[in-house]
Structure formats: structure tokens, C-alpha cells
Length: 219
Image 1 (cartoon, helix red, strand yellow):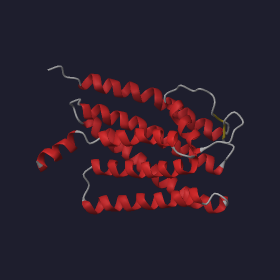
Image 2: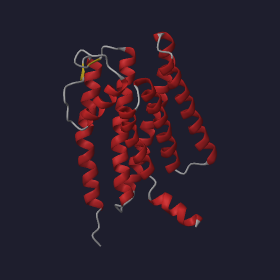
Image 3: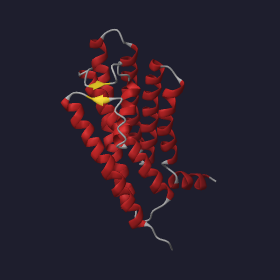
């Protein structure tokens, strides 16, 4: 029984991660703004735990990464709750974003390595590839959040105040090259970062699809 559960976890290690990443979008639709930001940070923490678990690290390394991610979550909550003073919000927000960005970059690199080193295409390969695509969108959301932190006018939203979800929304509309135009980058840095995301949004699906076709074995 234990061996069967372990095999199931190994063969479908990205499924829980995919569900968690999809939950990230639903959270904003059902809760208020401040609560949504806390939930978003919590979902990122859970996603990091699931990502780290898929790599089957030694127990000491696993707990080290979890502690670092937990500290980032605490810093992010401090940033969210102390809304009256920009000075007190800046440092914990920068710490949290930096840690999350580092985790996501490392996770994307390791996941791509695992996905492309396997010659056989499985359901787990497809789910993992989808997870990488969503993680890229989350990574750029953190880039935009960091830019907005230092330059509040870096993005415009039809005259309205930019909220956290607006940046998440903008990241995925840019990644999928939809570009509705209701949220737009204003500063030069924001424009350059958005251009890079749009380029990746075109290149990654093409490379991933070619990987699926190349690894497909009808036998």
C-alpha cells in the first residue's frame, strides 16, 4: 500500500501543484483585496512547498527551503498589514519578493530540466509543462510587483489605482499575448520587462509542443 502511494506521488507529482496554481486565480474572485493578498502569499508558500517536495531533497535541505519560504511569507504579511507607512512596508516587501523570485526561478529551471531529460512523454510531463507556464506568469507578476513597489506609477489602469490582482492579471494577459489594454506599463523598465514576458509567452509554447511531438511514441 505504501509503495503504491509512493508510485502514485511520483507519477503525478505536478497535479497538486497545478491545482494550487489555479486556486491562486480563484482566491481573488471570492475574497476582499487585503485578504486576497494574504491568500495569494499563502498560495505561493504552498506552491513552493509542493515544488520543493517534487525534487525529493534530503530532509535537512527540504526543511531549510521551507523555513526560508516561511520567513518570506511572514515578511509579506507584515508588508500587507502595515499599509499606512510606505517606509515600513518597503523592506519586508522587498525581502518577500526577492525570496519568492529566487524560488520560482530555481523551480522553473529544475522543472524544465526534469521535463526535458525524460525521453518519454507522459501525462505528468504535460501537467508539469503547464505548471512551468503558470509559474512563469507568477514570476513576472513578482517582477511587476517589485517595480510597482519602487515606482507606483509604473503601470496605469484606466485612471484607477493599481491593485495587486491587476498586476497578476496583467502578467498573464501579457504572457498569453492577449493584451486587452486595460492595464498598461508606463515606465521604460516596466515596458522592457513586459516585452520579455511576451517573447517568452510565444517561444515557450512552441518549444514545449515540439518537445511533446518529439517525445511522442504511438507504440
